[in-house]
Length: 220
Ligand code: SAH
Ligand code: DHB
Ligand code: MG
Image (cartoon, rainbow, N blue to C red; front, side):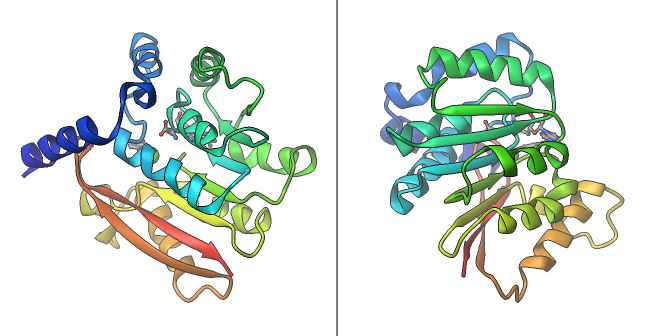
């Protein structure tokens, strides 16, 4: 199955992701710097970019930058006058992202805050323009419940919240998991259930990066 997923991913990537969108330079710089290959896939990145366009998002928050692959895709889609704030714990990752963002000509459109997101969120609340139109949560999964609280706090009715990696090859089903990340994903999913300020769905994904998925919510 996994082989078929990868082939189908390659098929649609070839059809739908032209070289100008593919960010070959970003991915090459990430690999050269030894960053883990855990960026969103090109088709998932395009999904995020399309969500930005569909919603007309101009103020975007991302938690979990890595090398800036998803940041650059969303900031490009948001266009002139938009701003994306992205939070990264690892200074080495942030440095690679800074260079990739500069090479993409987006230094003026993207702000990176380096540090634990739970430490930088209270700071950015005071500094950067809020509310955010779209929030993409893609960092340490154990903190997803806190990140959802922050996303709600920094949102308005109509804001969109997308959370990556909520399936983890099905390990989300393991209520007894000893993984803090799985427990964080499960607590987060429980918060979505019947949340008075959110309408939500969950979509599984397969492809070159295995079996995973994301949740999509709109703030009511
Ligand atoms: N959104 C990126 C991938 C992010 S990978 C993309 O698709 O291109 C997850 C990132 O979250 C890693 O770079 C990791 O260092 C960062 N991270 C982990 N814990 C964090 C924390 N507590 N605060 C901020 N970032 C964190
Ligand atoms: C991991 C993190 C991610 O954000 C991702 O998309 C895939 C894997 C990880 O920490 O393993
Ligand atoms: Mg992810």
